[in-house]
Length: 251
Picture (cartoon, rainbow, N blue to C red):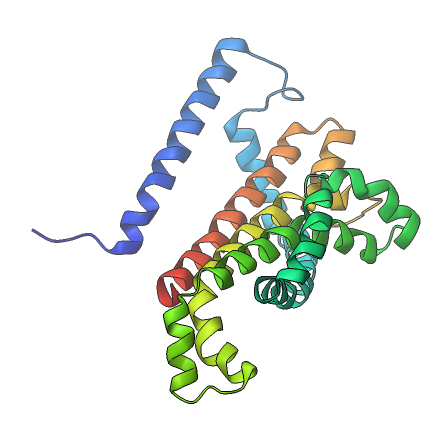
């Protein structure tokens, strides 16, 4: 009996979920008969999706949103990974820094929007800052956890085998051993940043998927709102699939 391709098998649940959503959605439209401004039909949303794709507007807005999230995510990783390593390797640093992180971590990125406008204005910096807030904490916490869980036997073995300097010990033993946990943090972080893109692009934005959704809301085009939501969902799934491949490779 022929075995299905792994990619086909992994797509199966998503296809099933999409068909189920479309079926329930169409049944709701038929049964309730709401106006299109409240709940458009799947056909209308599909037509709007094709229009946005053919004009190129959807791809432009998606690319801008991806760029904003990627910049903030990379910036978070550059700061959070070294900080997490430092906290994991130093009890004093962890005791001093961890309370600060735990104090700020529960604050929603939405709460930072007024300060982002005051500090950075309505340009790109404010949007990147809001996404940075959403992406920073998962990386630093998973880095601390990963480094702490490195087997002490591996560290002793590394020293015996010639890693006398701390920098050599880190790159040859600690970092490879903690990489799976760091990758989990990066994966979660990108997801939270991608979810925060709506909040970030509500700050006087004229581009991006968040802007597309906000614009559709203002002109009572719920079909346009749903196109933006669908684009965010699909891109999020694709990016998460890339992280799953990396976790399989390096985990």
